[in-house]
Amino acid sequence: MQRRWLPFDSEKSNKNLIIINRIEISEFNYYSNRKTLFNTGLHVLQNVKIINNVYKIIEKIYENFIYKEFDALNTETNTPVTVKILKNKALSLRTENIIHYHNDLYTVSKIDHPSIHKILTFFEEKTTYILVHEYFKGTNLQSILQNKGTFSIDETINIILQLARALEITHNNDIYHRHITAKDVLLLPSHDKGDFSVKLTNIGFIHIIDITKINENADIMSIFPYISPEECGVIKRNITPSSDLYSLGILFYQLLTNQLPFTGSTISSIIHQHIAKLPQLPSSLNKKI
Image (cartoon, rainbow, N blue to C red; front, side, top):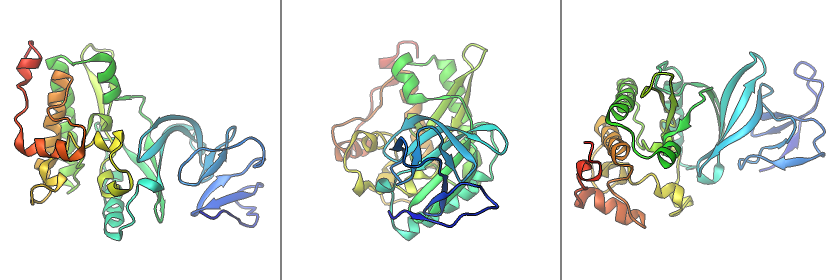
């Protein structure tokens, strides 16, 4: 990706700007203590990192094969936000996929629901995407499961009901998540025991992922235990709301048993189990059921 300097713009700043894919990164003493923070080719300083001259990066909080996620500050409103930088190496270049993803982002950004991680704004240029979400001090469900183990039946029902209500809203807007996993659910315990605030995030990401670029690494392998046979492509059916409900059922199973119904060492073995294997009864794995 080529970096170029643009002329001084007095209306915006008294500093030079680096413009990369039309995304402005404020430049302060660029040659001092520089590090590469993003895989999208955006180079910023350790001490001062400002995206689009508005969003100040505070700290990286999460990373997977699709994006890096940061706590950030909207310097215009002085409010915290979450910023996601999608990685070029994971993204599809197909025009159809990009259009679908753009349309989903636009629709989801118009939705206000307590169980959907609100998209405040997004920028795009070719295969580089930056998403700005509302700030939510939650933890992804996968991390909680690794530390906590199973949830109680009441806790599980509470979480699943909130996710089902979120899906009802997205489905009514003709938006399907298509890859609901434990990593796509954010959870924040409340002061009331057994109660949680739940946010569904990463809606529509499946459109923009190019699996052929990623191969069978742990991140991409983690999606296939959840997605429906029609999403995997082994059954020639359209993606419908039932596809998301299938994934939600897998997550329900995981919350109750702390294990997935279908696992394997390869993607093909996992896909085969979705259509050929009956999972163990949850009651055989959790005696409280």
